[in-house]
Length: 494
Image 1 (cartoon, one colour):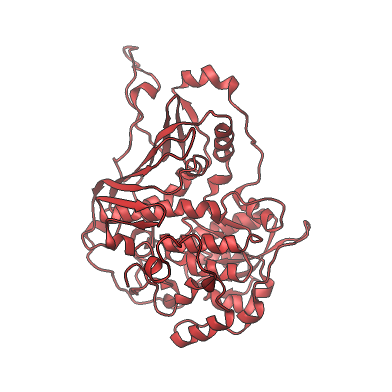
Image 2 (cartoon, rainbow, N blue to C red; image 1 turned 180 degrees about the vertical axis):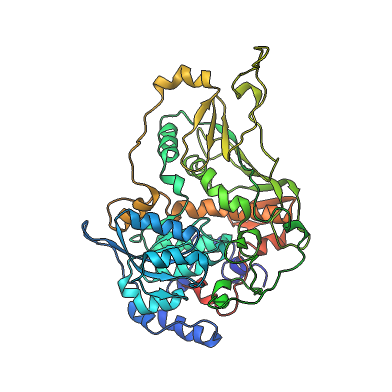
């Protein structure tokens, strides 16, 4: 069913102005049509819940939080959210409540009701939930988030926001329909110093005329050493208590259980994860994308790929992907972003911007290029060059002599702010606005959605920014919005 999102549901450039017939699909029709598929159980109380809004909490009240995905990253998120003092944990949901990785969260909240299926959780407890943390594998973000928002719940969703371009588009539309809901993507650095510095420096004209950006993450990844030789999905006996049908979620082609998928290896596979770029890009390119108003690229080029899986299953072990963004207005010329991942595939900071190095024995001073050792980014403008690390780390102007000459004139920026988690919970209570709402993080995620297709197909992808289609590769265009698994279609119609 080629072009599912763009041909079946849309005509030409109707993407932004989706007809309201889908948005207004009744909850009763949802129940009837879902029942016909059998695999998806939607319970009658969804009708009664309607679009209950949980805004309007008094400042003294705590947000009633449900958590979908309580192990690993979800467990870490839960600790910080609960530790903020702004929420009660009222429900825990995970497909593997007996797994070692979920036990810490269960022990920390022994009185919270437990569920294997988020649909059942919402049916049983929907009127007791104000907000939801969704920390599932990438392929599972969409359905749970769409259902939560349709029921009037605030949502914090781990990055990347969604697994496909079409899913990201729908989540942005749903959030726009419900402006009363707080939405936040879990790129935690977007509430750190880099956010406030970047914003202040752009507004003051310090960061302007950026023509190229490099970003990189070069540590060894889970699939390195075995991914390129893999020819099929492995199969192992399903452990007791693992809800594998629920784990597969919307992915059209089901695969057997394996420890190469659950609980953490899913990131390696095209069908389930977003590779290194989707994992780290949100922590490295978020402020550049937002404050330089980059939008969507018009061309994505796979400059380099190594350790490619010829069975079309797993991400390359190394890749360099280049994005071309057009001019957006004054001070925003055309800009190229080049992404580097893989061990020993690191960009160099040119010698003229690197710090001088003194030889300990001879005292000779040299200005060779610098190879970064930590994940980071470099921004090249017509006048200045900026270098920074990942997450919330602030930028520095390089070389240091250039920075020292202008530091007294640089604008100050706020250093005391709520962190990303507290920001979300305070936004649920109407006290702040989220810093990475879906209106911002959705389009950023679509850049990652396009990037992983470039890693997968290689070559050059031409992208029509108006129609939001890849115009020179039909297979890649279809994967912008693949058909969901039978029984999960209704989440696409909410």
